[in-house]
Length: 344
View 1 (cartoon, rainbow, N blue to C red):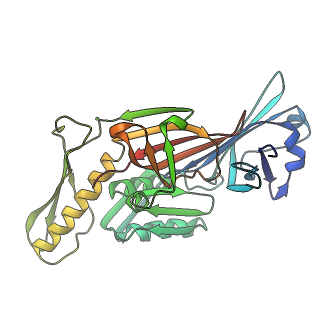
View 2 (view 1 turned 90 degrees about the vertical axis):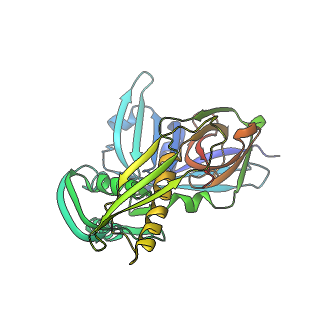
View 3 (view 1 turned 135 degrees about the vertical axis):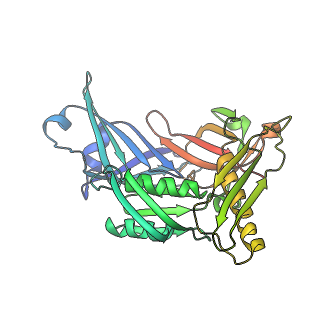
């Protein structure tokens, strides 16, 4: 069998510089995240980068990671990492080395760095996201069956990215921002997908398994004063008993609903509140069981996929991959962070 190998294709400000950089690449890593921006780091040896080349913060990099004869002869695949904005440059020596850090969020835009004041009334989360997307000439991908409508939303000394992150988290949704797109999605939709990868404990380079109890709640109770019915409505959801706790924690999450409640009768509105309580509780408890593993690298490993974990006894099950770092600094290794799918 012909030996396996990896390679990078690097495009800088629209120009393919693969031939110029390949002999000098010392290290590379790409992190693909589920609910935040992606990032890359690239290290190049030599002093030509500080003398002959003028690389600036805000410049764009497009990078692809390829493998040849990977799993078997003829297994040639490419991972399109995406387009990134350089946000940090550093130089060190000896030997002379330049390190580039870049993010999938366009730092030349005001989306993340500029704090603003704004107010919306009788507006949905989708409408706010669409307005912000349009302001930055970005596309909006809203992947959620529900609409969330607010009587009033205040943005006080807060960036547009922080505002969207806050509103999304409060409603049990997730947010990801890329170079040209704002993505709002329901993570449960991804958790419920069929598994496409299986990892066995015996095949791992390393692993780290954690069980969190600080932010795990037994239930969620929501309250909402309905001005039409003239009474305080409640919604609640109690989580199923966890297989990882001898007794329940006794912790209840109390929140007041600040979005519009759908329905006309008390029963319909309380049903809505019960469903919302379940969604919010899931979002709080989702990190109950987390795992980080290292495995031989593969372009197939991506955030948002579900995987089956075996060899860990009671901790076996379906996990959602939340972050993957592809690193080819020494050999191609992937570090995957994931969380175990909840049973509700």
